[in-house]
Image 1 (cartoon, rainbow, N blue to C red):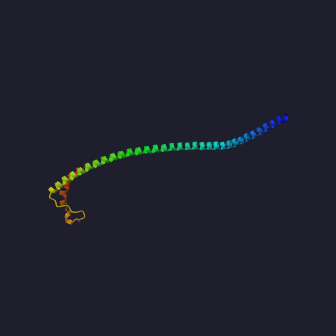
Image 2 (image 1 turned 45 degrees about the vertical axis):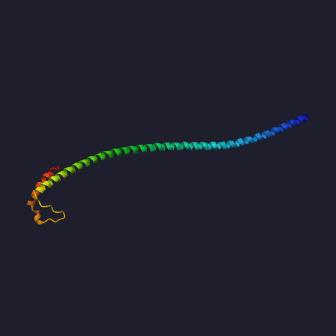
Image 3 (image 1 turned 30 degrees about the vertical axis):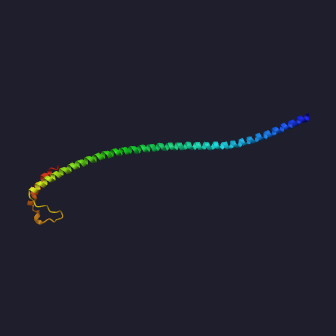
Length: 155
């Protein structure tokens, strides 16, 4: 009976030995997986830190770009307002110029009528040379007197 007990004890020890060997292999796999898991955790931590830094950089850039955009928008609004004022000023100057041109046109028409009534010879061309006999002051005086009222009306 001792032999049977010794045999059973040996069989149980052998079964325990096989079981421990299997447990040891699984523990080695877990340890290997743990090292790999730790590498993945470390990589994840680095990636998270890098993403955090990138987000901070993006936030800083967005704030800076926002300020620049606000400044540019404000400058554009000022320029648009300035252009509007300049445009209004130009419209006013053009209307005043048109009114002045109309007034000059009226005065020229009136002066042409008064010059025609004097029966003066036609004016010489600009590039036509002036003759000595045309220089007489007596012929120029009536012309000047006819034009003077028209010129004084311009003021």
